[in-house]
Length: 296
Image 1: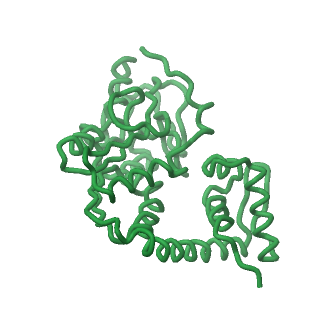
Image 2: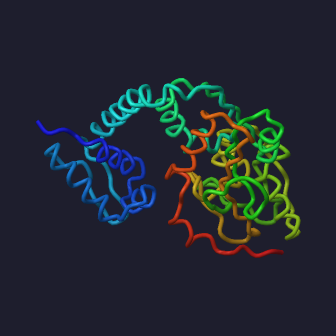
């Protein structure tokens, strides 16, 4: 019986998550042809088809769904075993600050992997919607590290990937003409909220904040229900939401930014390295979407 190579399983899990060979190739920093060859090799090993390829991406077969579940379990066990031997000396508390845009999306598998690889590290995470506030906590040594979405070209931190903010509405709830524009926002201090209100004021558009929540899930639920329009990074767009391309002022570009305290311990440094090296925060395919926004 042939063994299943760990690198092939890692590639397959990324493809299963993105359902797009080109996107997976960008995330893994490999050519799409290499990704395709690895999937073909894996299908040869398991002697069954794992993906069905289409014009706009791929989808998992029933066998692919089963393998994806088992592959994630196997990779977690592999990393736990290896991490327990290789990184047992990496200890200490790591206080991470971020916002729930990351913690509910890209950071979940990353932090899971970190805990498996560094089982003796004591990870503590706090979420807040104010990126400047989290960065200040790092500067004041009340946090060890912070991963936040900052305005492009602002000062401080390590910039890892670019994105841009977009207006979004519920797909069944178009804007009503001749009425103040309803906004579903985070509370004061949120970069998205400040950007939205400044854009409205520059254009002289009437608006009102109709929904406010500390929770990203709450804000997006309000947008889907038509209680207001919201602001999101383009890469965070979810089903049920539609980008508003016309009639509203442009919004700023953003950058995923990592702040780390001076004299950080080894466990914190390893988390920073894990984040920096993660393909989850590299979006080379986004460059064509990042056209300069007009300054009004």
